[in-house]
Image (tube, rainbow, N blue to C red; front, side, top):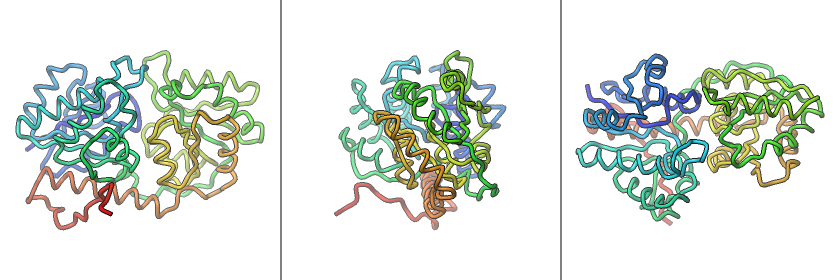
Length: 374
């Protein structure tokens, strides 16, 4: 049985990243198996039931690469400079990705990047590494048009195929209908604190709570750090006193987040996959666009995105509009479109891995190439 090394930020207790791994494991060709890179091998193996390799051990990753028949970068923002909170050098992610891809090509094995995103490429050497990664890829599918623009600005070869985030395939079944409640759920991200002043968020949410809309803070990524999403939630709740603020448990997975959102009035998202879950739930959302991918998701799904450089009142007004919109979340057509694009990205992946033996070969319709020919 051939195997693919699935490269991603797995094992960090982020429901969005874990959803990506689930999506790829379910969408590989039937005869293929996946080996996931992870920072917590035992937990990832137990949760996902797949083979794993410790991402913190370069020699182990190299051995797995030698034993694999392909390398697949499994979604996520691969093209970016790392945030200081990661504790790693800014260019480490892109450098390591390029090394793995080049090594795989040298071994004569295919390299695929599916549903990946492009963030800021402002680290030293990042544009060069981005161009190299694009050049060696047998399949490159990005999740939004904004990612194409950033690759083009870095001088990467064009055009590029555009699909949608791979996690959409996990939400193909419509959610169980539920009457929306009154509360506004805020999906938190400690990584956002570098761009979003917590005081700005408090100043924006305080008038929402004062207007009679209960605020529920939802940590998404909770770990061993004393500075995780849960700590951020407690800090925000204290700052909003004496107005009552509920702190929710982290979602078990993206499907659980969607189920919660169906019973909410609106969602404020600092997490990309919280926006995906909210749109799938049919609830209006407001993206706090501290990273380009959140603004991209809002644009594609017809929802508001507020940059943290704007006054807090801009976010207040957007949240109140969303709360008043009732069922005016992302349109069902927009949601179906995202799912279809994600599924097409996986069909192309299966075609690359299985070639002429791919049973989906007659179903592949292609993805839009951006920029297209004029």
